[in-house]
Image (cartoon, rainbow, N blue to C red; front, side):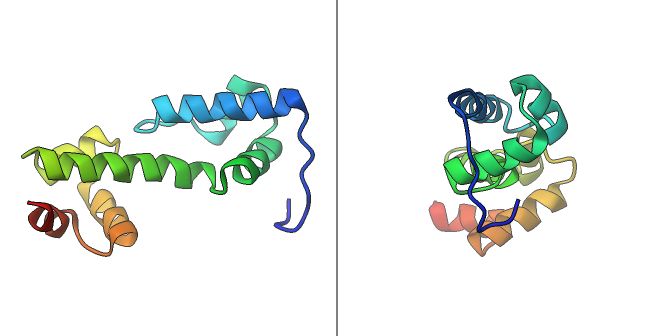
Length: 118
């Protein structure tokens, strides 16, 4: 669905999208695939993605990344866990992927963020 197209959501669709949001909030560190999520909430993938973006002003992956990054900030500021341990907690298979995403979002590496927050 193009960015300029209006998406019509029924009350049932809106409830399904809310349910998807709740599932993603709980499962952010190991989120279901779009395909699995659409089956969980009984909504086709297209409508799920478009409806989620329309309602929350971000994509499903942007939402799960935002939860991971907020958790990372908290863990970096309040614990002595290693970058690798934090990366594992957040569901990244490789700490390099976590570091790359953290830097993309925050403009600095997790280690630089931790040093600055202490």
